[in-house]
Image (tube, rainbow, N blue to C red):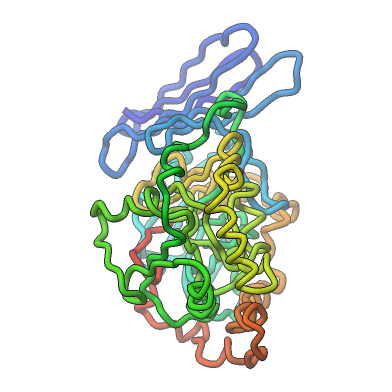
Length: 463
C-alpha cells in the first residue's frame, strides 16, 4: 500500500490512496480547531515503510501555520522552514502540490548515468517517472552534464547537472543559455539538490531553555584539537596549506591519504571525532558559491564537534547560526589558533556553539535513501515544476529563480581564484587570476567518466 498526502479543502480532508495503480478518493470531516494532513510515503526502492512525512496545517483564529514533519535518524522533526536562497519558494509550496495540477505523468529524462526511478522516492504521489533514455521529444525535463545536440519543444526544461564545483567540472561558457537552470548544490535554482540542509524547527520540536542540547560529559572528556579526514591533497582552495600552518599552533590530526593516521570506514575509530576532538576541518577543495558538501553536513554537523570551514560568507546563509568557525574570521592563523585554544579551555564558551540545536536541525542527504527528506529538493522539485508549468505556463515568468539569463557566466564565474583566500590569510602574494580556468574542460568536451559527485570519498546519487 502506498499512502500519499492529504490536502485541506474547506472543512474536509481529501485523501487519495494508490494501491498498485488503483486510485481511491475518500473524505472525512476534520476535527474542530485544526486539521492534520498526513503524507505517509513508503520507499519504492525496497518496498518497506520509510519514515513518514506529515504535513500539518492549523486552522483557527490565528494566522495559518504550516509544519512539515519527517523522521530523521530515529527522531521525529517538526519543521517550520528551511534555510535556502531568499528568492526560493517557501517550504509549503515545495512539499504540497495541488492535485488539480497533476493532469498527466511527467517524464524526466536523465541523459547522463547514475539516476534511477528511486530518485523520485520522496514524491511518489506527484506522478512523475525518471528514465535514462528514450525519445527526447516525449520528455518534459532533460538533465545533462553537457550540451547535447537535441531538438526541443518550447515547454521543455533542459537542466545542467553538476554536483562538483565549477573548478572541478564542466564550464558552461556561451552554452549557458541552452539550459533553463542548474541542478545540483546551488541554491539559486528552483530544483536545488544540496548535500544537506538546515531546518528551523517548529515549537513542538524545539529544546526548551535549561535542557542540555548535547552530552556535556562528552565535552568534558575531549582532549585533542581538530581532526580531518581527507584524501585529496592538492586543491584549488589550498586548504592543505592553511591546515599545515594551523598545525604549528594547534593539534590537527589528519586521517587518510594526506596524513599519517588511518581510520577504516565503519570502525570504532570513527567515534574519536566525538570522543576526542573539539573541532572538525570541514574544508572544501574549492571556494565557490553555495559549494558545501558532506564534509560539513555529515562529518561536521552529525558529530559533537565545532566545524571549521574556509569562508563564512559561503556557509552562513545555509547553516545554523553560530554553529561553525571560519578561517577568514581571523587576520592571521595565530589569531585563529588562540581562539581555538580558548574554546578548548573554556567549556561554557565551547558549548555556545551548540545552542543552535534548540531551534534548528541539520539534515544530511546521503544520496542513498530517497524518501520524504528529499521532497523539498532535487528530482521532486523538477517533477513539481513540470506539473506547474504544464498547468499554467505563465508561472515561469513569476519564478525569480527560473531564469537562464547569464546562466553560463553565473556558473563559470562563481569561484574564487585558486588559492586566493589562503594567500590572503597566510600573507602571500595573490595567485595568478587565470590559473583557476587554465585546464578546466568545456561543457561540450566533458569526459564521460566525470560522474563523481563526492569526488574525494564516495559516490552520491542525487536526490
